[in-house]
Length: 164
Image (cartoon, rainbow, N blue to C red; front, side, top):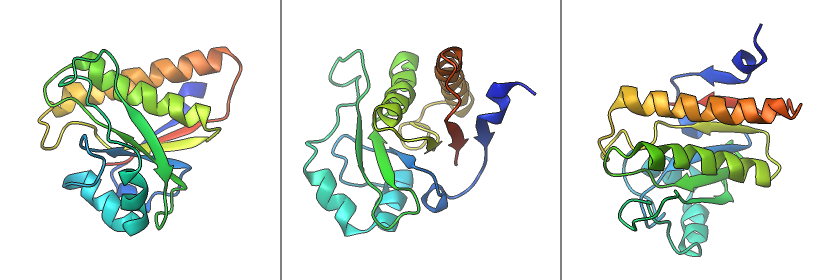
């Protein structure tokens, strides 16, 4: 069996109930909660998540700020089964490089924080309107590329779960 195939699990489940080191929040620029996944994560984590997010100063979306990168910031998970929440802001239009950056920067933050497992929602496909199929392809290609580069160094320590 391909080592890469053992690293990625696709699932359709409530991301607020997944026990991993970090879940990714498809947040808005303020990081202060909103609708969809963002609201569900904030509700499940409790008020302490909002308190910590208020200290982060928001997160630009990479498009409205004319940035070539996507922001990712990490907080504790509080009342979630996940230990941490990585917040990233997807593009509000179909910008493949910015969307891929959300996944790459979340993965980099995971690695930099010495964490081993992560669950992603579908970033930017809700109210931001990104096409589901194109977004899924970008997510999988980005994660696969990251894993292949990680595996090429002989590291075999991270299991990825996509939650929906």
